[in-house]
Length: 275
Image 1 (cartoon, rainbow, N blue to C red):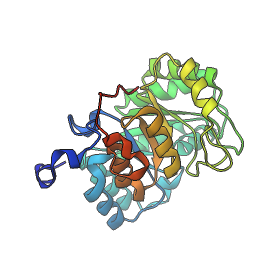
Image 2 (cartoon, helix red, strand yellow):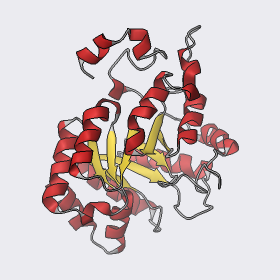
Image 3 (cartoon, one colour):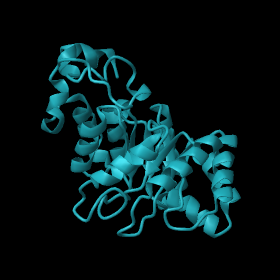
Image 4 (spheres, rainbow, N blue to C red):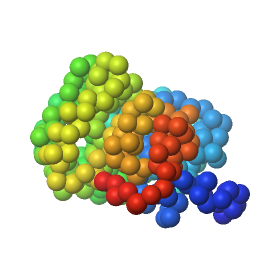
């Protein structure tokens, strides 16, 4: 964020919550944006407007292989020059594993300039040993590793106990965060029901099982889901699979600059949030 943007508005108007402006944004609640095929001009526009409020850009599922290589490299360069992590979607690595091409996958993403990967088994079955090896390979190659827990099939639920066990192993292997699966739709998968509403009991069970919670990144593609998780955990909860068009709007919600979280700006006693 530039000094000019801070100077243009009274500090309280810039962050009514008081929880986002006191230190660099990227040291707090993380935002992962999913790019399902933005052109170069649109991508540059996204970075110009919202780069200070994003941490990770994921090129959704297997779309990375469909770009012309020079265009893909340019998008990666732009993201990295803005200080962001950029990675292909976890489904692409799952495809590489299924086709026995994981070494080629790692060689290619490093050659292209990606600086992050997502390790997931949302579509295939993967042994614990194989998952750990992929995480460690990513770390050894200098990549930031984000893992994902949960299946992508409609109606699939989160097993809180298994999530906690998986998170412990993933973190020990070198993962930075563990995302809780919700796909790019947020409908009838993971934490969310067929209307996209949060299953409150599932969240309570997850938090009861987890020994550490600040490693979790909740996929929340819909505004109602983002607002609910912000209201539950405060402005600095990690949120993923955010549509590019919502990146700035999400930061506004984090600060209490939107009616959904307007109460964040109602100052009183300091609020102690989970993250």
